Image (cartoon, rainbow, N blue to C red; front, side, top):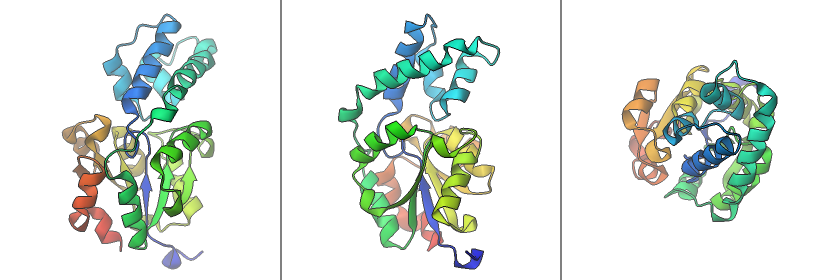
Length: 226
């Protein structure tokens, strides 16, 4: 497809951006670490949420650790987090924001570090499949965020014009991943990362949550994509 004919679009992270799950991941990793005799403070875990599990483990346990236990840690997290799936809830205005983007002719794409088996639960909680064009997950990336692989895969799968694409995320890892491709990232503080941290990482604008972004859509970077 010629770049001039590629549509504009909005990429959305899911965890902490559209679904209120950041702290559930934090608690699940904390318990998984405890079960493996790793005492990692929750505050440190929270700041690593948004990376893929490989980079999260490097950050929290060190790159020189014995990696033989990594899969057990991942399995422990997955099992603990799965207990919350039926109770996952969208953040305020999440589905309405996606539908507003689609109504303006913007292609709506999910770009997440979540594994495929988690994505189905997140989509069920979000209830916006009717306007989601494509999904890129950890299976589509060689490296996880803050590497740009997932963002690049989402742009390519949806056939987007990268120069008319915005990424919406809640972590500094989202901002950094988008920035490596020259794609602007709108930050949301609903995942627990402060406005100053998101702006300092390079976010082109920061809002409280999807409802706040929707209420201020006309003044946001998303409006300039039309």
